[in-house]
Length: 69
Image 1: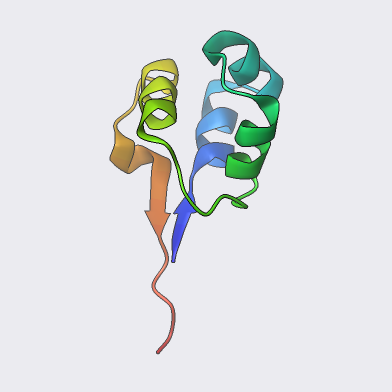
Image 2: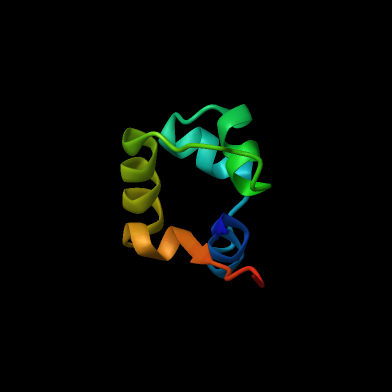
């Protein structure tokens, strides 16, 4: 399972969803869904904005959790 690592990245930088919304022009709804891992897909434009904002690589935004088979 892939999960977004936004809670960890935001905490490391002392950011809140409201900060990211204001600074990136990504909608609050989209950010909250991503932050809470409720998104089923992510737009590449949004990934780019988040990478630029958080000064990270796309691989930093995701965590792979291996499910028991």
